[in-house]
Image (cartoon, rainbow over all chains, first blue to last red; front, top):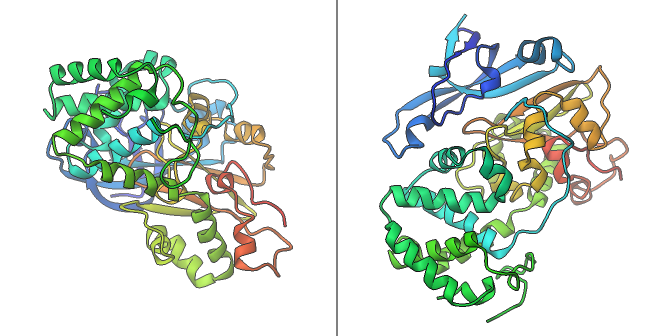
Length: 87
Length: 101
Length: 208
């Protein structure tokens, strides 16, 4: 996994743990967290695959653009590998 | 919810009622048994929609979501739940009177 | 019916016994009884779980923070693996995956869960009501400085804010900066300065 990543823009219905406000935003991997069961399967009582989970750091400028309160402040979120594209 | 406009953060707090603590305990214990997961709880909460967020309290939403998952897992039937809720309501007009069968 | 307002562990709870029974309370009673009758849970398990949660409080986190302030090796272990460090101090945090994030003169950390209400509950106990509100969850990621001002915390532009959205399997605790003028305080006295909000990031430790 490259250091820089972009969150996928897809908008499927159903239970996902990728916040809408981060879709399509670019960040850097802050740390790797290991593999965790996929919540998109757990949510429906299904046997779940283990997916790599990353902590991704975004700048507020990237997330909110001109609307950012302070563009150099940052936001960290945990994102599963299948929601990330390498840059 | 992240990023949508909203008003000031109300900093009021409350001690939890016994029934709320019981709902919390049921969620943790059902999770431990493998009947459903916290993601199942969250999915049911999300499927309840925006209106539920405005009209129901936190643990009201939780017991509704727990029940949804238990019905889906076949732990009990809708008929069993409905009959039991009627019986509970007949025990008395307050939680204190109805809480123990 | 017993009508005292103490749970088995002695913690007070809201006086709700005398209010009219609600639909959702009726459902709680029915679901609980069905789970017991079906052999899924026992009443003793439910009581024990309530007592376990009642025993968890911000004081546990405060003890961890104070230890980190006085013991650099412990602090290093806390920042490396906060779950292991909490267990090392004897706290039963169950399966909690905890990450500690450190406040410094340059960096202020703030914890939120925009998707639901994820919180380091197995260390700090149940979250405050405001943590679960739409307002906090919506705004903490977008205008954290304004939110912090509402909590009485005004940060200069030189301080970088790091917001942590607890979106998945990790939970977060802020390791606040040790207040100045506390060199002579004991670990227990230091722990008394550590507030719940200072471990969420919406506050700072008390001054001695």
